[in-house]
Length: 514
Image (cartoon, rainbow, N blue to C red; front, side):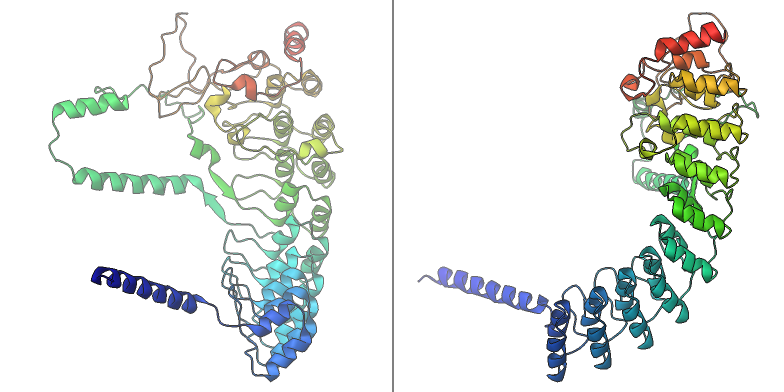
């Protein structure tokens, strides 16, 4: 055998030994008691303890005998391993779950009580920021909640994701028993989730991008030649002489908003808002009877529980809220009212992200809900103040901006003659236009927001008429009913309206309303 061959074999053998050692080091310690507890074998657990096995020995994922007994509600195994000295606050490798977390999530009150008596921390958080009280509320486990309260757990503990409380976890799950128990112990009904300010987030991201750009520019040649500068302007579409004309500085005119500005702030949900979003009538009744404010608005975009219910298509729940005194005229910060939202969700566009579909499963029809709202005093002429960002994934692709739209206008856009008639019978003005939104950066067509990514110049208007000023009349209901924006992108494929409603709606607007 050659010397080179010998060296090659030695290297291979050495590598094999290293791999074996590495795998051996990565092999988790034996956890016979945890394995026995997983199978619910109390006899094996006792025998292993007598043999000196570690009662806190964990499996590869960190599950110990206590975790398994907590999950499987094995009170005997729980007490045996606790008596043997098992760590009541051991955590799993993923998630940081203690046995108390798992027992609470499973709703196993007897195991919870045993763990608490032996020193389990009732206020411990998982690595995902949730406490045992959150899990108990979600599991609708009144017995667990009572045991945790007796041990000093915080009824209003906030999770680390968005300050959600146990009351909110119960509300999302329609866990009425848990809600009633939390109310009995005076949990705070008015607490709200954290606010996410998208404008601030975008501003910070923009500032960071600008900082990185400055760093890159500083590393370049400090004296670029004139040709490069002109080429850069041509590539970016910027004329070297300056920027385009800005909209008139009318303080009363609608502000031109970016997509981020339209979204603005989100969050500030209470437990009642969560119940409204999910359409949980039972949870809503419990919360209202306990004293939740039926008109409390979110801190983020000022949405009431009624508006949240309607936006998500929960017409039946909206009826319950109206019967409980909800104000039908509380609009969100974009001016969307429950009446407008009813039509908007019923005729929501086909978008690239899922729209709520609960409206298809309601006993209350959208027309019936509109009647209820109008009977309760809803303003049929309320107007949106901006485009409705969740109406579609991109206002430009819709071919129309909803700024200044009324419920009647939205009904016309859906070619919904029945809804238009109902609104007119209740005082709707059929001649309210949307606002004309003039943006100098780009326009897909009339009344459509701009996109800074395109700086193509607009064609000159051959009519010779003066342009409609920013904030002036934009789209009339007649335009909306006759296919406004259908020449833009794929609007005709995305638009939803009353089948065969084009001609009847236009005839109604012209022949009956003039």
